[in-house]
Image (cartoon, rainbow, N blue to C red; front, side, top):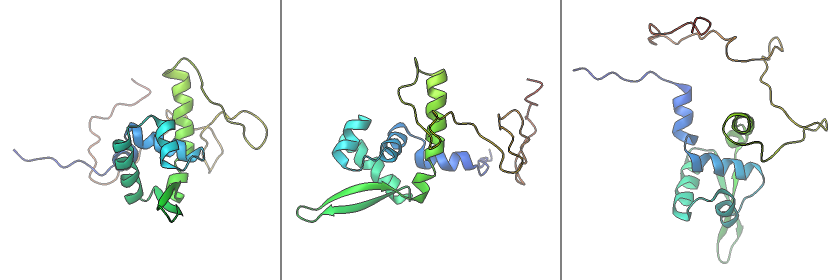
Length: 155
């Protein structure tokens, strides 16, 4: 039987880097401005061995960079790279979804520079319209099998 290769997928590629609980929680804590290993461990609840592994993986993926802050003994902090900082809106959206659908309410809110509590809404850069997901039409790359696709409006 011929093995079918999975189609290239941006979501799958992103999940290979950050699609695991401890990795996402590390990025969240770094976005809050927590940079030292012990504080990251306390704020995520991650076991130290797992945290060490996730920090190394995030560093090798270019999401996190290690910066030495002390020479004797050598100690480092962890900071988000440009790629890591671009995850902030994704984490905000995930947290907003979690408050609405997966927990008993919001545990944190954010104040925008305008002074109002943030409610993240996705908009189209071209027209400014709100993006809900049901208003999108996928354009598949060559080689994608979309024969099993169901029209979301019909479902």
